[in-house]
Length: 113
Image (tube, rainbow, N blue to C red; front, top):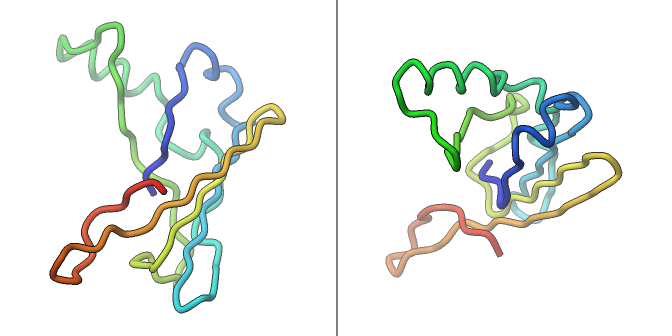
C-alpha cells in the first residue's frame, strides 16, 4: 500500500502503537480488508536512522519509505481498487487509490484519486 502523506518522526515516535493503519481492496465489487496494524508493527524508525547515520546519509529532510503491514492470506492484492485509513489521536484520514490503466489496457502503478 502506498500512503498519500508522511509524518514527522519527532511528532509521533512516542506513540507509534497508537496509530492504526488499515487498508481494503475491492475486487469485482466486493471490498475486503487486506491489512490492519499499527506503526509499531513496522521496523522501528530508529533502525533506519542508525543505518542512514552509519552510511553518512542522514540529513534534515530525509524521507524513509519502510516496509508494509502483513497482508491477509487469501485476499487478492492485485485489486481493482485500494482504500486506506489511518487513525491517530482522534484524527482519521481516508485515501483511495486506483490502479492506473495504460493505453494498452494493462495496469500500471497506483495513483491517488
